[in-house]
Length: 75
Image (cartoon, rainbow, N blue to C red; front, side, top):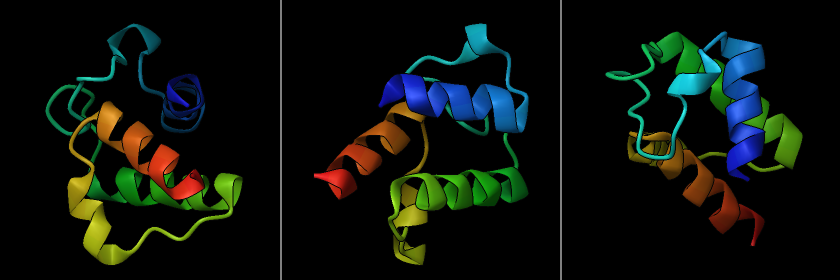
């Protein structure tokens, strides 16, 4: 799952691949803004056929948080 998220960040949000590690913070380390985060969430929802609840978005601090969430939702 980490490789999938990494690929989305590189291809869809133009994040430098070498900066993407599980503990990298989306905002502070990767420079992702709220609009880009919304785009990333939409991409994840489409790709994995899930719905990310608005209340869950605050959980996405690091790349690892996204990976964990997606693994949890996918079962």
